[in-house]
Image 1 (cartoon, rainbow, N blue to C red):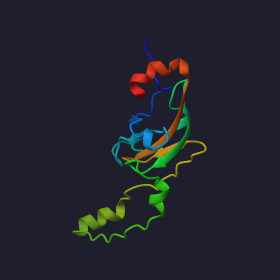
Image 2: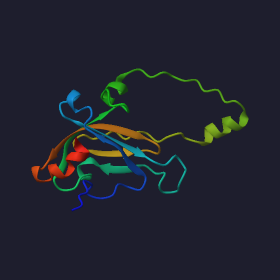
Image 3: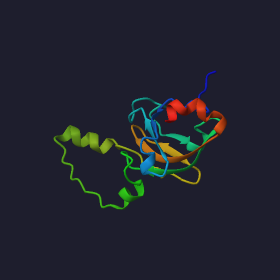
Image 4: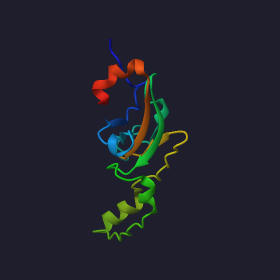
Length: 151
């Protein structure tokens, strides 16, 4: 028998980079999941657009994400802690007129769309990586089928 934990394929421009319980003992049994948008700004007419996924719809029957908290890229602190910190202001000085013109014509990114923990919907911008600590519920009937991956 073949078992796939995914309910359906992720969008073509999104990869699940990490699914691990390596840090579960430090986070009350939560698993770390990391998703990446695989295209850069203006790299492709459609695949460079932001991509939206629902964490509730990732896994097939028998595996459910019941809660999720967005973390820093490394997973060591909630993203909300980072957003409260003061950010450094950078003064950018163009090297020449051509660079100055490019800076005026190009926006480096679109605004980040906050993660909604209630709906568990996440939107990834081009080249963005987002990390989550998730509580999974796994039906006992399929737990043995995924034990190799999950342990």
